[in-house]
Amino acid sequence: MNENIEALLSLLPQLESSLGAENPELAEYLTSIGLLLYHESRFEEAEGFMKRALDIRNKALAVDHPEVGTAMNHLAMVYMAQHRLAEAEPLFRQALAIQEKSLGFEHPTLATAMNNLADLYRYLGSMDRAELLYKRACEIRQRFVGDDHLEVAEIQFNLALLYAEHGRSEEAEHVFRQVLHTQEGYYGREHPEVANTLLCMAELFTDDKDYNKAEPLLRRVLGIREKLLSPDHPKVAESLASLASLYHKHGTYVRAESLYLRAVEIFEEALGPEHQNVLSCLEQYADLLRKTDRDADAAAIRRRIDSILEEEESALD
Image (cartoon, rainbow, N blue to C red; front, top):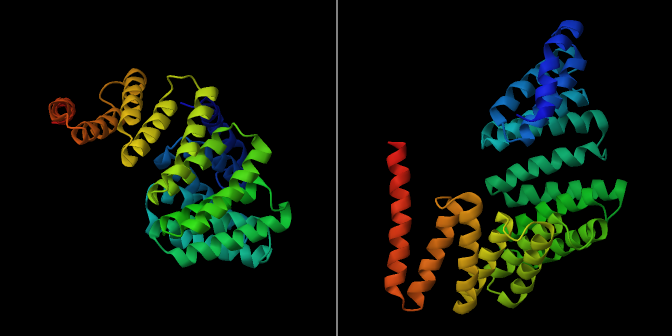
């Protein structure tokens, strides 16, 4: 268990006793625990703390108090992380309505609520509603912190993903480049967040079969990860597999093969020979073998994959 969570939980009974079970200060404490659990992906546990915090604020504050909206937003985030979108949407909408009424339509807090609701609409495939909210959120943040700020780039990144998912490649590339400019200015050229944006851009170009644009980006991601992490880190293997897949699609099979083999070796060592990343990489490698007329080798890889899958099924029975 996360040490911070454990420490907060150990103090909770004492705080409940001294403050009372419905004190707004207790709601803040419960929210802190809930957020830590949320960031640890312990969503069911986080839900209980967020619900209790919201209940306390509903009882202690006016119905349109901004802290009630914030508590609703936190609970909706937990629901969305659990793919309970039908429960998350009304909470996000209500949270935004409360904050607009209590804080005004240009308050910086609104940008977070708009971004979260836009994320939900993006997952639901509602392009127009998501785009409108992302743009409004960007405008609010730009007004308060300027154009080249990480808080603006955070929303722009989500907007770029939306454009990419709906085939609006030119717009996606333009926004990704804005994000990259901001991140490089703040973090420098070699940072995990920079690598993540480069990877998304590379995926955009790969989907458009623009391999000449995608290749240098994937190579740069690989270089960043090799420098920041160890050469045998799973993230390095992911980059190797991505680059191999690009060469595979482009028909550059010799380059792809060596990268697949290196990625499989790292994945096996770091994650175990039965990990999904190993199987996925082996499946792509088997396809490459078939395309280069090595059917017997491809069949051997396929038997290895099937054997692992059968063992997993037997273990579940």
